[in-house]
Image 1 (tube, helix red, strand yellow):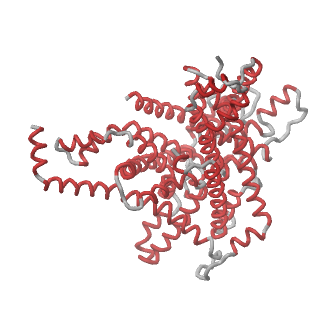
Image 2 (image 1 turned 135 degrees about the horizontal axis):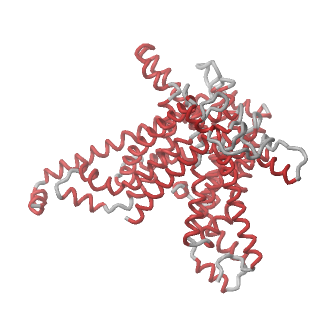
Image 3 (image 1 turned 120 degrees about the vertical axis):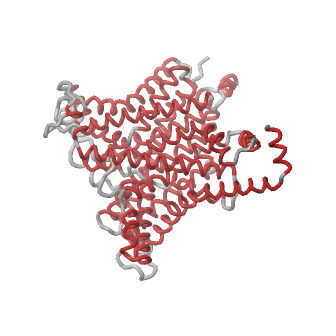
Length: 302
Length: 291
């Protein structure tokens, strides 16, 4: 039955033609949602944002207006907050790398079998828990009547409770906490792929542990470190939730400035300009990171 | 034969202590958050005053349990509706786009690929404001083109609320789904599909009966990931939400006024729910490996 079917098909080029028609339809159906997605949800919105950032607030049709950008440079508050945000993001990224690298190495090379699986699962779970829940957990830890204060008072280290929330340290802890698992996973991924025999060979050749770390392990882990840094940097620079909850009303973070332009000052054009500056900053640093480590974006995002 | 770079015993102890400290840092805030949901006290703090389920079930005015709080339940309902929609949308569009990127050659393929990767490196808050601004502009265009009367239903759909939130979240969650599904599609032996077609199946038939079942674990995995990402999304939703908030938005507004153990209780609900979903997702992904 099957052989005759195939036989018939091979003899009739017409049927082949019908088939190619099907394939075209298939392609078209696949294409429609992709086009809508790419143009209506990604390209046009970004373009529109760019356009309105060059229009004066409440007065469209007056031509190109650079005031929104001029204001950023002329009012020192804005570019200072901008700079501060950039430094915070770089600091958080470095801190997350420092905190996560040893743990990633432990997971990849030291822990084995069942304990490794358990550890991995334990570490992955909080990664999925809502950022809001995680930030709230830190709020009840750090606030004046919080758990940390209670413990320190009980032990006798503190005489009076102190407010540990709403300052730069709280923001920093929160940002590292919120993003560190995004560092851990890519670094763990590359270290997992590092052949143990390389480390053994270096050891046999007389390298001490720091030489091994610096000459063997670190160069091998650079792709993962780059992905981790890019993701953490991007998440941190765009963070609004953690910063406002742990930093209070005046946390002086650039996302907050953007939010205020949109929802408090109702100056969307100004907000769009700020948004674009933030996007430019994050893109430049991401591209720089890629360039420095000789990687492509599509490789970093698996 | 130790595999750590260090071999001296003291260094090993320090290393182990570090790992323990890392886990403490990771878990203690979450565990305390969960424990305080059951503390019989009016504020989420120590000392322990006894066990209670008031913050889950009580209907008393001063202690409204999560499951008796209508606003809270409405926010959860909204979150579920949004997350389910984003999940379905991401799975469908992600699967179709995967076929395009893995199988087909087309003009501008590279451009489209970069375009869908972009939302992963654009800060969420920028995606939020860009879609807000674009939809606002679209409303203006629709009004001038068709007049306020005819445009009204479309305007209603595009104004901040359910649909913009779903689409805004989808714009980056769709990327994640596409990457997950296309990774599996790349491993699919195309001969199987060709064989089905040789046996008389149409392209659609072959895809539905042979390829989609093969992709199923990754489709389910992508669905779970999409659902979770949507459910916890904050920055995009913040700008696109209308009158009915999702649960993260609602809790955020609450946290600016007061901290009550009710928020610990909802945290417990969210943590348990998320963990269960993650475990299901991981289970499905494991199935994929053994297959």
